[in-house]
View 1 (tube, rainbow, N blue to C red):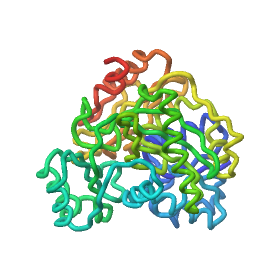
View 2: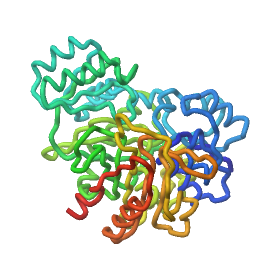
View 3: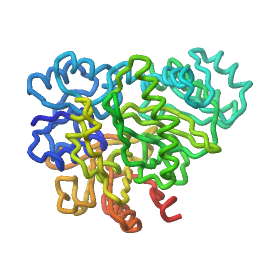
View 4: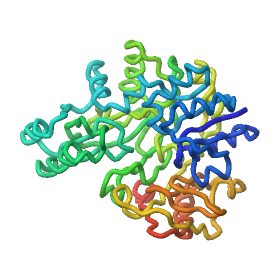
Length: 429
């Protein structure tokens, strides 16, 4: 079987690792991949936004299954293109992907279907937006409407801060087309969490719960990032809360999509806020979260290839989705300065820890997934803001925390940075 994974980050490395465990005889390709992925899959130099090139490759190589990791190709209609060419692909189509690629669309969808979300207004004019925020209670939330790699959300504590963020997005255009429209949203002070499901368009099944760490620095301080770590299961999601999330969010969202003529297939990720026993939807992602996926998939007992195929074929109801009864952690090693200004091109010294999953399959409880790396002359080099994901699983929480932090202390590259409170702040406060 030939399988193509689209993407180049830690999420895609974790997906490929799960595919290898589920179907070790598969011939796996990744476009464009990274240094660590090249150890367990054949990397293909096609960019994730080259939809025609990816479809052409899948057709010429007779790829049996394509799995899409990032949001950009989904928003550009990769699923539509593959389906039109008779190619099997896991993920939502372009119209379904609007739930992530347009926050304005998602907010309007939630409001017209009576699903709780924060109050908001959208603007394309700086002056109009300022006129609104000058009369709005703060804190306030300011978001770029389009895709911004997890960095397009600002929590403003004052009118002056709101002016700064609106200027950056609408005037200085730091997010380009993604920031042509901004959303100004009411701030809700509660418990933030995410919830992911997989669906075949008719039924859905929940993935293991996970808690991610979005802020750059310890104590949830600093800028929003794509994610600095994750743990699973989420320590604050009880069985009762999970059932409430399904009843008040997941069921009505999927039923409303179906009512509006959208057949949603793939992963749906709901970013939620819990306040006074009410559940509000903050945002959607239409793909596996990153780095949540890393801590989820290392706990997966079921065959992930069969999961993808059952969603494509509308047979998810008969699929048995199982996770191990343990805990897991993912620690992100980043380049100092991420997500703003950071340098790349530095050699990574693994100091005997094991440079990738290829080296450490003898240890079934510890994984290294590469995020922003490249491999040249047998060596690994930094090539992004988030560089490595160090992951561990097990029943002993102090042990898995120590495992990833001990590894992080041994691995060296110039300007290496990681948070010191992943898991510790809730498991070992």
